[in-house]
Image 1: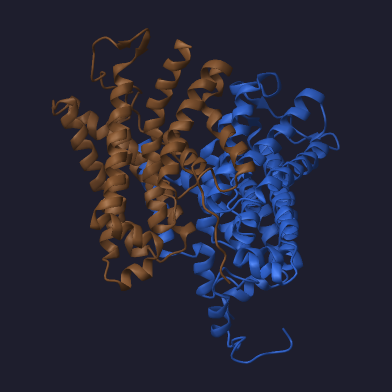
Image 2 (image 1 turned 90 degrees about the horizontal axis):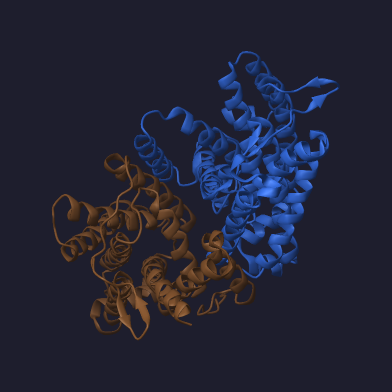
Length: 341
Length: 291
């Protein structure tokens, strides 16, 4: 029995779900809050992984989408009394639309230019959260109304957990399905070589816009769940540090792997909680750990575990398909042309 | 009109700092195709090393300046040799991540002695501003602009006329070709990082008399430098210089004529508009796609 077969077992997902629910009954409020936050960041991380890890676009606007999602939920609830069950999907749809719009001018941009453009958008949104006081209440922040479920107010971390865990599982399974479909393959083709993708009949601008839209949707839902988990939305959460955090999650987790998004979110949400000491000591350890993980596991934690056959190989892993094929005894494509592919 | 000229000169002084940072970023980008995210911390290190030399060792401002840029250059050299070179074959995105980690480390290191307070160096010229006709120039601004111009010019001369400069340009053009022609590319990379960090540290110590020093000061300048470099077309040395001055002036004018709160955002607004019309910045060259 090899360990990675465990993860491909069809009972794994339900078992993980049940296990998480059982764990949540045994947590204290602090651990429950942390568990909620990890699950929220899984959704956010999947969003950044789609655009950066799969479609290969250097887009760093997801912190802004996350902020828009969180503010949408918080403001619809506090200003108009709209139920969380309506405002959460609304946040996702709104961010998908914004993501699509941001993606349009980005179609002409590449690498650093795209990076700066999207980072500029993130900074613009941060500025608006901070200075559009009539709408966002500025630095005072907005309190998030607790949702009600058939008359029960879900105002504790334990109650919020069930909403978050169901949403997170749904979002991850959806992402898995999309990334395994022709859409996911098109994203990867664009990442590997845009010209070759175009020659293979992939409508590059269309799929790039799709990736932006999808990524925005995930960040928006993630932001809405974030609002539920922390119950207070303030501008400073969505500054440049959030942008860097999303990038770090993808890189530490492992570019181009869905399991990398999960592991990256897990590690980088827990890391600041585990590190103790003065701010200086925390920063130094944080930096050393980031550098250390990347130097010793350049393909990220997920890539490292996949190479050691602890995690199952994913559909297409960044730039090293040949290694996987060789190891699994699948002949190279050029060594033995196969009509089946 | 007077007001406008004064604003422009103040903007040029700020812009000269952005130009230095942008130059540093572009040098590293041209050599290794990566963005150094820890560059803001080199700026911060330069400022604090200069401050320490000035306040604790009792050196004069010019001596502190020299010490700061040499120490900054040494830090850059050590980072290249110790951290980046062993992993230089990694994908560029991974290298960028390493520099992000590096920026946290440097911030932590400088926070140990400098966490408690916000520090400042008194202006180099305590005296009165220089008045030409009825235009008033703050002497510190003139000093900043002049020093950064000298550094920039020195760098351009180095590129144009020295063997090392030619080797650096050759390596940027084609790394393997340069290596086969007998250029020691390790030396070139180390020099590039050293020179780039000299620029960053110089900007740091030059800004010390006009801004407050604190360990997080690097983020703001990194963004400005990045914006300046992109505005000029990332990878273009003249573009970075022009971009830096443009961002400095635009920022100051925006802050005065439109809204003070917009100062931090104006660089991004300009960049977003420019990138929509010129996707490769003002001086960027079109990428050639080879199949």
